[in-house]
Amino acid sequence: MARNSTRPTSRDVARAAGVSQAAVSLVFGDKWRGRVSETTAERVRAAARRLGYRPNLAARNLRLGRTRTVLLVVPALTTEFFGGVYTGAARVAAEHGFGLVLYPSPEGVGPARDPFPSARAALDGVIASSMAAEALTALRGDELPLVMLDSDPQGSPGATTVNLDIAAGMRAVAGHLLGLGHRRFLHLAADVPSWTFEVRARELAAHLGGIPGAELRTARAPLSIEGAVAAARTALTAPGPRPTALVCDDDLLAAGACKAARRLGLRVPEDLSVTGVDDLGLASALEPELTTVRLDAELFGERGMHALLAVLEGRPPAVGDIPVELVVRGSTAPPGAAGNEGDTPLERR
Image (cartoon, rainbow, N blue to C red; front, side):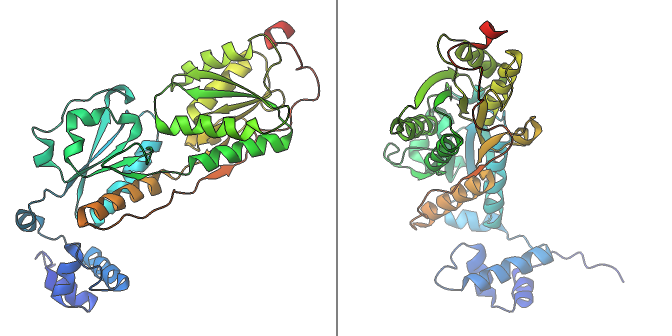
């Protein structure tokens, strides 16, 4: 028998899901809340997936005056984290009939050219990382519904914010290292003007500030492995007692710190404990594997897209930061018992 090549219709979906055609229209028009149940809406979407049904968005978009297009503005895609953010956001966008355009800001920071003749005319909304916020000036983001990721809720007027609980992550790192017995800390901080990195520095200093005998020094580094190697080497060879724990703002910096330690003849974790943030694939590729704060990038993207949908529909977005998790691996241990008081590694070699 020849296979039926006729494109499935909303009537086919309604029949397969056991609902009315009106219910199908409500689900794919994002107007189902309060009219049909979540269970029914998911049954409609599942039936549509089985049948390969795609709603005719063109006619509906003309009626609604929408393009069904959202822009995701992120730093340059130098790590997999923002790839995960895109994956999560795109998944939710597709479920609601939206297209998602990914727009990396050049070099991760600074202004970017408008990718459209008129962003206002071509887009329904923007989701942007605070690390790429300057790109919004060219995109005229203040004229569009805007969701900011990793951004100060008090310093983002006109925007909805979605954040990871990065403060809790830094407290967990500090608590873990303190519990191992560390008291001399070096913070390898990302040299990027971003709210999320300000939170990391503030929380680490606040948590260690109340601990008798705890010392905290800070070294700033570009967000690259080689930049971290240079900054960590300089900090670890500075005069005075060497830090026993190195807290890095992300996994790339941590990888560079481990490389610098090896070049100086230091062992991780016997001579120096190292921690990161993100839990990239790199974290488990290092030897020893990296103790780090796991950030759920895909969930971050999903929450960002859900928040924008809520803004577009006039609903309040979900509140509350996304939980994070400390993953303890082999790069942290109690400080060495001898040989690291009051000297530098270069003097010992």
